[in-house]
Picture 1 (tube, one colour):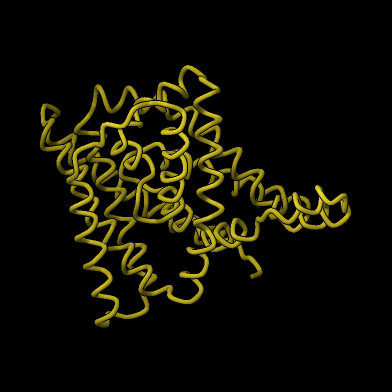
Picture 2 (cartoon, helix red, strand yellow):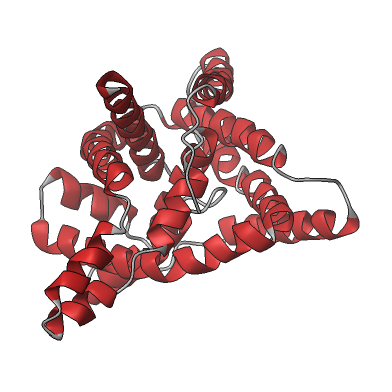
Length: 291
């Protein structure tokens, strides 16, 4: 029994590593990795259960009720998952700075393969190919193509902007198909946040995290509702988003084709195969949850 519990904790931690790695990559969503590895429904449900009742009870002096509210939280999921995400973000922020600068086309080709395979995986969660699902697919596709084509917003790097960026980016990070890192790229905050992580600028990091907490607690309830009551159209919309966001790595690849074309193609194939491999491996260890 203890061995099984330790294995589950390790697998959740591993999922956190994959999610954290994806969240640092523009064009790849940590939410997609959560979906691929079978933890997504439990994660969204667990986040949606967090509220301020524990704080309200504590302020009223009812510490027993406050403790009861806190114990409802899924710490068995949050602790190993957040440890994995944190470790991956701190590690990958340094690696991504080098890869995007030195091996631009190859790196984005890898992203292209990741996103394409992820879109196919998410499509498998669409119940049927009817008019409603196709419509939402096209809406997501057109929105993503237009959105990706926008020039980066020249926002400054003040703490209020960092807080807002955290709110917006975290919503994208938990949503399959939208990359939180790409949102930061669009807001002109991506390289700034990478530097903040590399230099351990705690004022900026803490401000971003506070914004992310507010954003995720607000957005998770809506997402939990959509997945419970409108799962098929939501997934169809997300597939459209993912296919549309392929414009980003494609544009980056064509703009920096100094890399060997064979290497670029191989990188794309590796990214595609990696997602398929991960999905097959984690399919054996999907974590069940009770709503």
